[in-house]
Length: 230
Image (tube, rainbow, N blue to C red):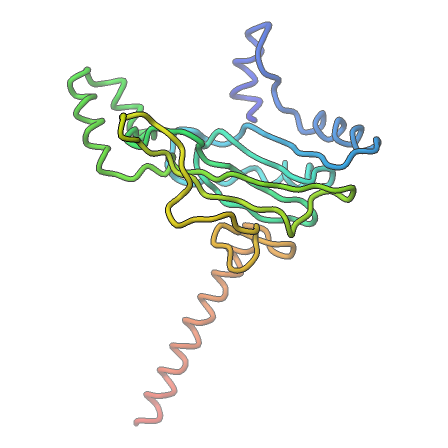
């Protein structure tokens, strides 16, 4: 996504993936929408890979593309960022990982250590990290249905998945224990991080304001109680 980062590397070669340009993407999506199509799904490779902390996705890009897209799906962070609707578009900032070794803590500190220490120490580091749950071993699958009007929300579902190891010591993907297909942003969906009237940033702000309001109300009631006892 970064023109200054990936763009500089890409411009040194004659082959490779296209560097994302928002103006080009908007023009192409606008052109596509002129035809009689049922749905448009935009898949973008964005975000930082080497951190186990959820990173904010570029909302300016989403704001520009959601006008034309039914679904916007992100990848690359290998972390499950949840999902939400913005206007008529389903936003999935990152699907997480479909298959990822749970014992590898692929974060900035792990990368730095791997470059500075030898094989013996690296083996010890790998064993050490096995005691931690790696958020990158998780992700979720989407099951989407479209009709002539685009995405059918009532049939938009997701399933959380985990990477695991079977009896033969091979990696495989399974559904999260006790999880089933759930309708996106319905019935108390814990992975839903926003809705039509509240995107991720506004939801977070509203939640913080509500928490502060509750704290203030509690302090006020305590003060009233103290004054009544005087």
